[in-house]
Amino acid sequence: MQAGLSPKADSLALESDKADFAVVVIAARQDNKDDPRIAEFVKAYRSDEVKTFVEETFSGAYTTTW
Image (cartoon, rainbow, N blue to C red; front, side, top):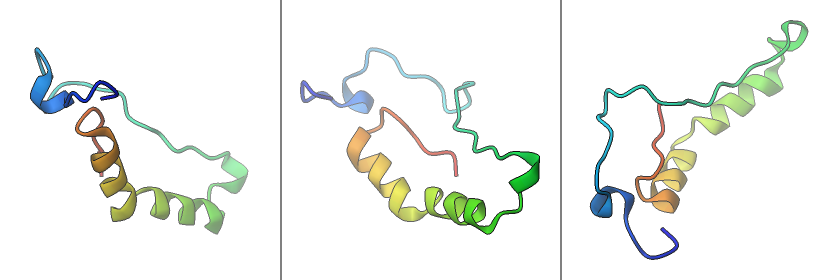
């Protein structure tokens, strides 16, 4: 991307949409799993704004799973 290449357009090969891949897991300790701040963080992380940021910033190098 720093060289002006697009991961989607300029890659030699792409993984299938069905390929196994790493995902971000948001975890909490048992004693604070119901903390409203954690729920608010998850809601903010999974927002349309974050999805748009990832798509625009990483040009297909990363995708969101929500």
